[in-house]
Image (cartoon, rainbow, N blue to C red; front, side, top):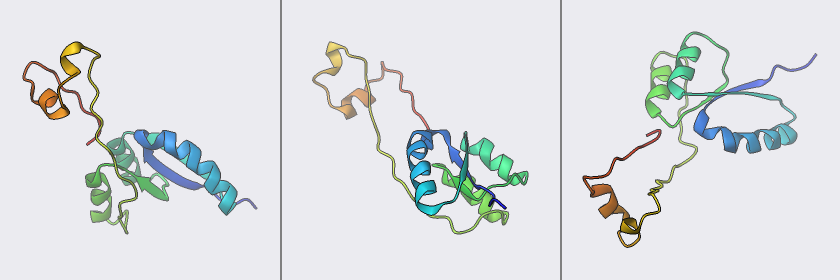
Length: 115
C-alpha cells in the first residue's frame, strides 16, 4: 500500500523555490509531495472548505491566522523572509537618484506585489 502524498498549499510566489526543494525533500524523506500553488487567499478558502492540506505556506500572515482562529491550523511560524526590490525603467533621470528619492517622486506610478 502506497502512503498518501504530503499535500502542500503554497502561495504562487513560492513556486520557483518549492520546485527545487520538493524533489530534494522527497529524495531525503522517501515521502511524496503534492503541491498546489495559487493566491494565498483562494488557497485559504479551499482549506476552509475542507480540502485536504497538510502544510499551508503564505506570505500573508492574516490567511494563516484565520485558519488558526477557526481551528483548521495550528503552530504558525515564519519560515522565510522577503527582500524589497526596487526596479525602475532604464532612464537617465533614475541613474543618479537613490531609491528613496525615486519612491517619493510624485510623477511616478508605483506598483507592488504581495505584501
